[in-house]
Length: 222
Ligand SMILES: *Cc1c(COP(=O)(O)O)cnc(C)c1O
Image (tube, rainbow, N blue to C red; front, top):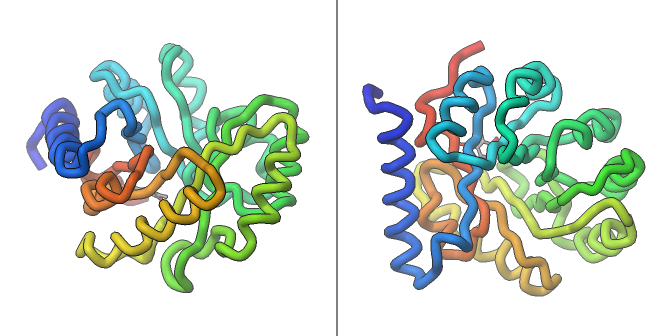
């Protein structure tokens, strides 16, 4: 890839606009979460200088190392989008504004005990393949009640990661199912869709799309 980051941001914006027009939605209903896992802090700073404000990271430890280099980005909001173990909950609460992958009552309790006001989403597992983590749809009512009982947690929506498939039409049914679950539970936000299927996700109601490769190119190998 020889394009600059600024050109790739523009390409992603154009793809978003196309899907937004097709689905009669508005740009301000959708947050672009720039997924920066495996990239150094300098990439986050460059993206910020080009106007991006919301960043997604997968690993608490990796982000903890980058975090000191990000103190000059006052408007940046950081979302944890990778699986979170409850023994890392306190650390994660310090580092992130939004935790998108809450999937158990135990984890919710630990986050609540950190004593900081946090936005959270529930990660939902909609098929046996795909992400290993996530709450089953049947577990949602109890988990939602438990989180709503936590004074430091504000539950805003649902997140999912369908089994990876290059054809966005195969992931569309998962997006539709997540939207239905969110509606049934009066949850306004939906985090779904990545580089290759963001259009389908927007058409199915995504309020947050998590985009890495289309913005930053292939991730560096460790
Ligand atoms: C890495 C990752 C993404 C971004 O994937 P791309 O295909 O690079 O856009 C989105 N969501 C989650 C949960 C991820 O782990």
